[in-house]
Length: 397
Image 1 (cartoon, rainbow, N blue to C red):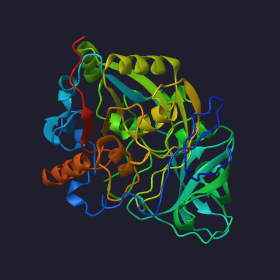
Image 2: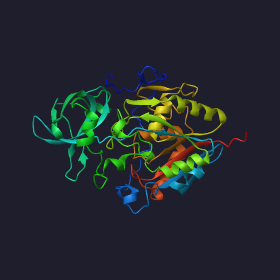
Image 3: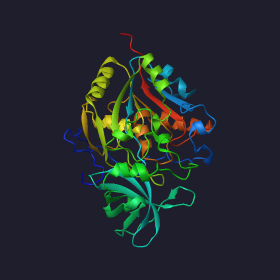
Image 4: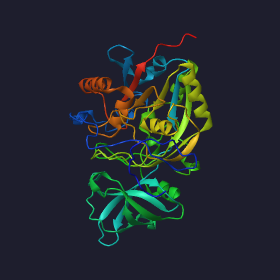
């Protein structure tokens, strides 16, 4: 892993030997027009539904956006618990099994004594990570920390040390938000589990235990060799009972793994390199469903990125692992997925390009207008959005 994150023009198949998937294009237009709205503060979910008076994780709302072939966009409103009835026998849900790390650790700049919070983003080698240093905001969260480019070291809680090496290449506008750093800890994941806490931002009301940020599909942290800096949150509302109902309905649930890095809630930076795995069983089930005319629905943008990174130009999915730099845009389009279950994304977020690639502009515009009008909640503890684009009639044979 080189630490580079540039996005290349053109398309190359996923590298089965663990290399980069580099396929996409980002220009200065970046989600042009999709950011021309403001998110009202009251629509920011500051706590999980089970703390807001709901009966459980699955007590959230679901906006369903369909684009029937040769028809006008259709938007309907549901409880998330209705999901099994909204899918068909033979449909495939692709879920991310990456666990969420306790990736925020307190520390001080060795040279100045300044307090900081280190967000551990992506593990590149045994002791090298991509990190972001943020300033504590006095309310238990953090704020953006300007960086002058100094190669500082950080004394972390518990005696570990973090040494900045170089800014991550390819950041938007020459940003120095993300850095490659050496992390001096004998067992990094065990250290994070003991001294870290889940990353949270200012719109949330309090720190919460790691369990609040794990999904029902996540590999147990005790057996994990890596994990995500931030929760693959589209899967948070799923419960064991709901998954059982989906399987009883005839919906197939298959895994991928993609370890997410830290998001940028302040800017419209493109996503950077992340490690993914698409196992053989998932490739086989997805290809079979496509051949049978069933739908492939990704649970979260991470599942889209992994599947599309493992796909040939004709949409055939291969079992693959490696680093992906794939950025999915409307121009590139999608080759595999027919649908996407995701949260609602902030104005000018880079994920809106992926949503437009799946949904088309008209359906996406209508969905977001309805979500704002109907008071849907944003962020990792908020409501969900099911996109079923170019919806086909159910197969009769």
